[in-house]
Length: 210
Image (cartoon, rainbow, N blue to C red):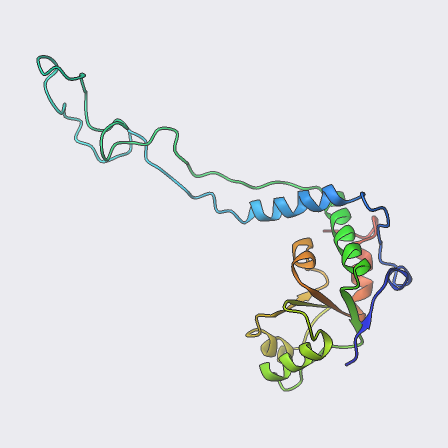
């Protein structure tokens, strides 16, 4: 399998919606990446208030005559083991981004990588023997200097998936599911030619669904 660098003119020939305006789409990329990272947060941090801690409710000492401030129990935050004031509670960090912004961000991220010469196309990508060694050899031949490689296709055989699942320097992704963060994270992007039509649909205003 020989890789061919995909340039802007080649992307246009494949009907990929490239964005040639340098400023357009930059904010969309930022918004989408921030939303993706926020949506991965569990929001499960939790602290107990004075009403939830295990406390006896008994006065720690008598009301008068001690010279100390009066106390009604050991649950307030000033006591060791007491409740937490304004501490974190379970919450959702999810952010919503509309489809048009997602499409714009995807187009911008893909355009930037194409313009930088980081995207190549191959006619096919398949590891018939299902061995990680063969997978690593193929990746090294397609992207010899890249530490992180993203391979995009419409689908991969079970043997190819098995060969690549233990090779952490490369990631196999469907053209229907690849996202902005993955496009920006990897040093080199290998696109199987049969997936160019899917990428074109995802970057066109009428056909994009993500």
